[in-house]
Structures are given as structure tokens and as C-alpha cells.
Length: 234
Image: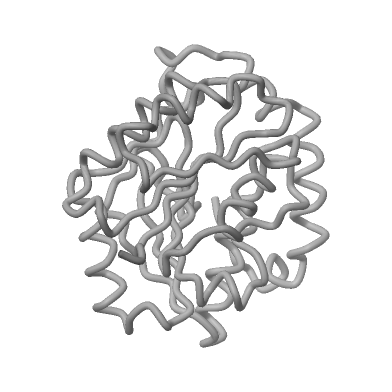
């Protein structure tokens, strides 16, 4: 069965946490057969083989890709480039989907024109009150229009800002649909929001001052025209 949904899970040196999150997503789905789940691990991640072992109970829906990348944004993009589904859903070690999430998303897509529409679905992370898409969700038609899932020039920080502001701009110009679905909560249990979550080495790597500075500069360089039009993500 060709999958309808591709879940793209970039992970780094957290195999136990990553596999536990994957199990949560797959067991929470109404129809796992319509889903492919893709792990993307950095080339220097020596823990990546543990992902395949942990995922073995769900084979063949689970794929593990070792990508020649050093950070999360290009890893997610590698996953999208290898996806077979028509709906792309970002996942991470600390992101948890609601029960029945697969049919909830497919119903939203169907209600807004179907899979062939360039479309972004904006869901809630359970904490933020702004429009930032912490979980990037789009049709492959939207990815093809943009030329990427997340722009791979980012290391980690601000890739979600670009994804969001471009979706807002495309919708304003009638080039794509931006479906506000903030009642759907894909809970983001990041240390930033929940101090019970340890600030481990992976968080420190992804949220470093260097990554923030690089992402902030690139975001403005690539999206000044949208910023000047007053579009905001925060």
C-alpha cells in the first residue's frame, strides 16, 4: 500500500527517546498502514543503528536514513526528498501527536481541496499562542512549489519561522492554502517550555547561540520582502 502520510523524524543521539516517540505516533494512529515513518540521523550519529533495532516491530513502515548532514533542518529536508506520501508531517524526539492524528489531518486536507492543493496545516504545540508552525505539515504539492520542505541552509533555529512566514505569504497571494487548525495539539515537550525535560547535549547543539545567530541572519536575508509586508510568525 502506497502511504498517504510521511512522518519525517530528524533525531540526534537519542535513540531510546526517538523510538519511544515513534511508537507513540504509530500506536496513536487510526490506520498505521497509511503511514510511512522516516527517521533521519546525522552521518556522525553513532547511535543511529539503534533506531533500526527499535523500529523493527513496525517494519516495513519504518525507514532509517543516515544523511550526510550536521543539523536538523537539512535532515528533515532529506527525509522529505525520500518520502512517498502526499502529506508530509514533521516529527522530533519531543513532539507528541494527538490520538487519531492521521485521520484528523487527512480530513482537514480533504475539506480544503485535497492532496493536489499546495497546502500547509498550522497546528498548535500546546504552549505557544502565536502562529509559528513548530510542527511543519504540508502537502507534497506545497513542497514542490517551494522547492524544499524546510530550507536546508538553516542549521536548526528559524527554519520553522521561514516555513511559517512563507506559508502565510503564499496564502495571502492566493498561491497556496494555509489551514489554521490550532485546535489540533501536537504537544512540543521541549526544555524551553517544560523544565522537567532535561537540557541535554542535543538541545544545546540545536539551540546554541551560533545556531540562533546563523538562523536569524538567514531568515531576514531570505524573507525581507515578507517581513516588510508585515507578516509575522511570533
